Image 1: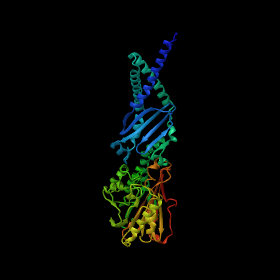
Image 2: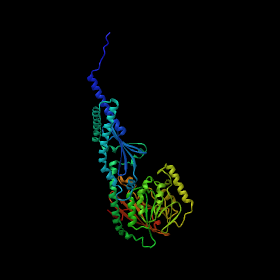
Image 3: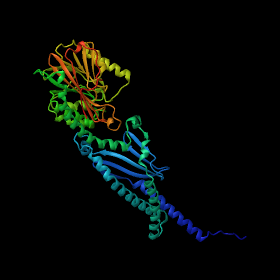
Length: 489
């Protein structure tokens, strides 16, 4: 019997081998980029790890360990771009959180360096793709070196085409509607669009200079209030700058410094929430307060923490209120911290928070009211109203709403938010003004007047109004909603 033996066509076999080698080269190119293509860049003290890997659809994934990731479908090629924030250098952190005018200059430098960094990254990926294709072809097929190099060049060319198409179709606006994973998904309401955040941060320096300049004009306009009487006629009248809810806003720091300087106040009373999340890095934002050579009386708020309190303790002339009356420039001041300031969390379940606030009230009521106390400072207005009737004057915060109220014969002052609701106000439509109150008070004799001050950054306008507080207990409750007596554009 004759056995028919089928011999493959040499030409077909050669074509098959060539295709197999080329596919191996393409696979090697993508595999090499996936395994060896990552690179760490140090840009202005910011350490970024960038990598590319094959994917079913094009996307950019930003890894913010341990918070999670932010991803968006930014391009059309089957590649995923990964950007991982590894660390922020100490020098950069100090510049980012500095209250000085060049605190955000690194952002401009980062944007200028980014194209150069991306071009370098792209060339590196092509080199890694070529090397990966060459190694895999040599390992599997062992062809002559010349053919291996040609195959690797083909694999690199395919990868370059895919990468180039991804870059060409890249759309940063896709991050307007990103997807979140991990803990960061719980905070999407406070995460701005990247472009918007950059633009807002770049406005901070100009806003700071405008604010300080306008405070100079505002001070020159205070003479308009002389028709109401001069509360400083008495030699022993003190000027107390009341602030609250700075919440890590560097512009708010300049606001406080300028008011303290221009109005020549005798001391500063802060009703809490100096920081937003109570983190150690945020305390760098408040370093500008150290330049104020005045007593700084502080009642920690619910957004503050042990790190915040330690920072204030290290400030010169600082006084942390802890439930005991202290004498500052002749004023007897009583107060204590919001109960959440002792926790690592900035919020709690409402029932639990209510219980803690009630305990704070009971602790302050446990001791007989001291008739010598001139001023009480607590962060939460609910606590203030529970103490109304026992003390003549209470300063509070928390609501971000400036007000003057009369409750059971007690004047309750809320300076509002001296940081315009915090850093989040830098990248949202600003609705909360920067605000403070300058209190005129004579130790042992009570307050005589209060200047309420507001700065609206949207209209770039300052407002000031004087409230006469002598014999105020005979008046009705007054909210600070009246038209201003003096304003500066």
